[in-house]
Image (tube, rainbow, N blue to C red):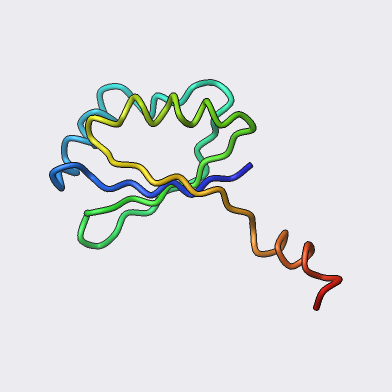
Length: 90
């Protein structure tokens, strides 16, 4: 399953996040896959696409970063999958 992770940097301190990433890596547990990330132009938020079958892996990963980041985690599907699901209704 795919999850859009919306991160807001606590205290707007993006440098602290990147320092921890440099020092410890992404810290994802086995079974949680990083797909890609995008940072807003003002460095205030990051959008990460993550994939896993066990939501607790995502929770464990978020706990490792919660002192630096406030998370919103949204389950998502691709537009192609949505179109297929709605095909009989269109």
